[in-house]
Length: 172
Image (cartoon, rainbow, N blue to C red; front, side, top):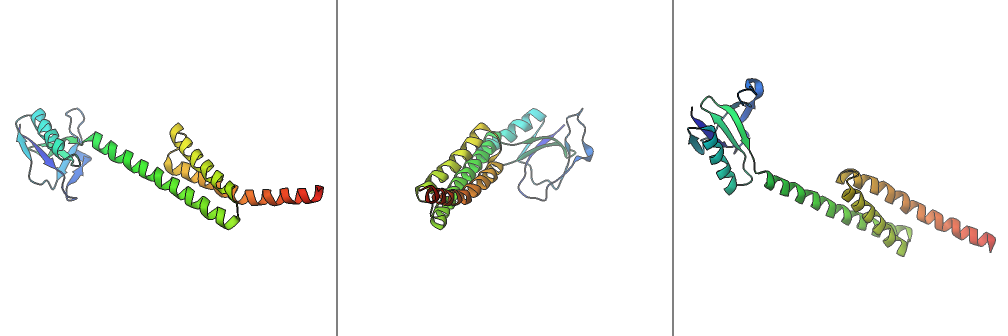
């Protein structure tokens, strides 16, 4: 049987899972196929041709089908996609730390926190990074928790200072 390797280049390619047959290794039927990048006599040769293409184009997705357009393999460059995902995660973490620092600067200016505003920023950023390192929550959930804690602390610090000043005035 003849096998083909196709590169997914557009969104006209449709995958129909109705023809799925796990015993034969068929994922489904592919419709709207472009020109194949390889035509091979065996499935292994088509998979090898697909991985050879992915080696030169790591962002590509390669579909390996037979002559009846039955999909046997979907090939991706997993290390490339893991690196892109890690980069996006690190970029989100960096922007979140920047946002906490900017929030602290604004809170310090509006509430007159002084040097305690810097300590609050360090606390928020440190707490956020600790939550991510430990794996307690993902980046977005950790950011929301730290934002809530930071906002509460920014409102509590002036109230605590006022209460302390009132206590000192009363007790002399």
